[in-house]
Length: 349
Image (cartoon, rainbow, N blue to C red; front, side, top):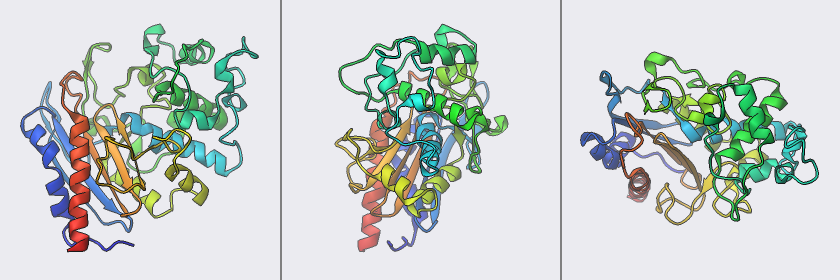
């Protein structure tokens, strides 16, 4: 186990500078950076506002962020792996094990009927990256069945796809026999955050209002507020708690933990997560035993298992608009490299 830095608060404050500069320039409304070690030591630094229009609201450590695609790894992937641990499903079974009516009118020819849980978790399918499902209707039940029966345009090379996780979310609802919103979550994580403590996101062109406490992703909203790819909200400490539980092994079985740490047939992916590759959002200073994931609203989580440290950078970079042109990927990389470089200095100094 790594030794504990004497001043973790100083480390996180130093690493906050890339995003802090953008916050001070009012290009991002607010941000919080949190760091946690395997044995639970943690520190956070934050600045800016949880909301700037129609009124300003100072960001606090108790605020809930729309985690966007972190839903994939904080909620959907763990729920799938729990079913694997219980031998309810196998990762290499087709989704039709849970969704027998998937493309039910083309049983012998539909590409979607051959997809496995593993394919979708590792984004190793030929489904499109995204589709404006919310434009096809407003009834969540009808939209779910539209998704299941639609003949998706397949692409030549696999890409990161929300459709993969939307299908996994529908599979979970079938297997657990309840909506995703009713699946239990850890303290500080929920599909229904306290509205008065929610960080505002976009002035939504579709819903014609500032979003605060309702999911930013239009497809997740149209599907009832939660889907396999988006919908979860959380506090910085809840995200750090989750990361720590993966590092200390308390989150899941050894088999599941190995699955999320091991590179899959998709060289940029493990089960659910990204693994380190050139120019990824986690920076290049971290070890090869690092996994991570990002969210469209400006969120991210990275876990370096070799160094036994994790960090989350949560921002509301889409407030009041997604078209701010903030270089969020560069900020994420700079933050990750700053954390690891400073960590290594302390450990060797």
